[in-house]
Amino acid sequence: MKVVAYYRVSTKRQGDSGLGLDAQREYVESAAQANGWSVVAEYTDVGVSGSVHPLERPAASKAFAHGLPVVVAKLDRLSRDVEHIAGLMKRQDFKVATMPHAKTLELHLYAMLAQQEREFISQRTSAALQKLKDKADGGDAEAKAKVANRSATLAQGRTKANQAKGGDATKAKAESFANSIRDNIELCILKGRDTGITLQGLANCLNDKKITTAKGGTWSPMQVSRVMQRLSLSF
Image (cartoon, rainbow, N blue to C red):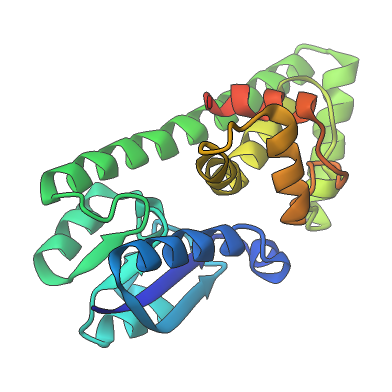
């Protein structure tokens, strides 16, 4: 069966570095091989939020215009919005590499969970930043310094590599980074299950993929363990 692959990353930095895209391609290639699909075209949206309807994105609209089934690595690459997914189910044919045989009801359920996850992440990030601001407003000198530093860095268009560390704001940033590499970790776990994956094996897998830690270094078993706990992942 002929299919069209579609990939999406939310930030230009992810698109430039390949972070996230390589994992998505591996998911699709693996599913295509296992299910006898032939990928005849690939389209990638870079710097496009999942809140934008798929048919309103430059690359996604071209992918669906082929009239062939569109394959994505994970459902949230199409959208985390339940209404978007429900509408596409009625008008378009698409498949998800991580669950290629999922029925309509299952896809709808996963879409609901993906939307809930997005809302939870947004709430946790907002709550952490608000708590830091409240401390600053209450006269906490350290919190004031962090808020001032954050504001100054944001004005300069900061990246994750130079984000200020400390307190609740750092926790929110750590969660954001962990979610950005979730696909890569899940893929390493999936590939290592047959041979008995370990924390060291996961660290080696991430290093082989050239995925760096939040500080830009190489992975150790302890660092992998911390990220897995943050993402509630297990072997």
